[in-house]
Image (tube, rainbow, N blue to C red; front, top):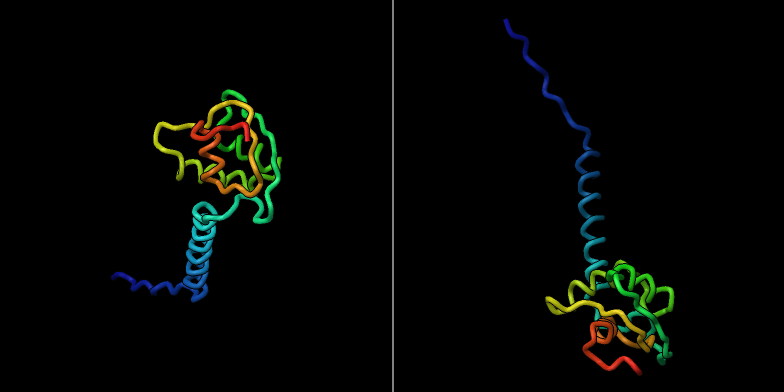
Length: 122
């Protein structure tokens, strides 16, 4: 004779835990997407200040983002990396060189300048 197995009952908090995880991931995705696609100056909305940066050969977008963050041009290097993936035309890339940027520029303007789409001598 076979014994009947008792149904295992899961604690009710497990469903709430999964719901919390899903909501947290959704909120994180929303805030990251908003930061990437928001049409606002990358670092400062006040009157801009000229900053000279040197992009070295072989730097990727995240490294450039760290350089820009260090110089007060962007708030987050990871967000800048995402913006470079979203805004740079396919085949375009950040070019090495010395650039005069402004703290009031938005990410698209910075990327256009760094990819050689705009004069970089300010």
